[in-house]
Length: 146
Image (tube, rainbow, N blue to C red; front, side, top):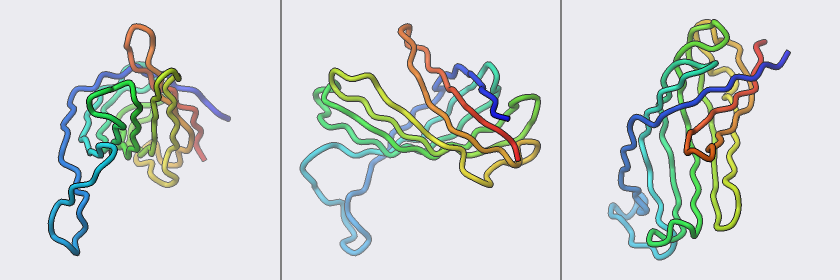
């Protein structure tokens, strides 16, 4: 049986880091024209049906660093530790998101099969992140256990 968890979250740390475009063969950073690529280490605090902490690494792309409305996207691996449905443990989600001028942001993701630990062992599911009109971030997780 599928369950739905709704959890608001706050980003408690946003730590951007350089993105190396050069490969190991050239030993240097390559100057590349085009969209800006980056990576970010993120900490989140969840509250609601899911209570706990998320630790994520994001790879980001911003079409035009001077014009935030031009488009952007990310892909992420995130380990979520806490309590869900009265069960304690951790699991990993892989998720992505894009935003384009004149379009609503889109996100989607999945629980990585076999990533559940503790009482969350055997979890599977899909997730999305919504940004409410007031700016609040909300995780929606549709999940089940083996």
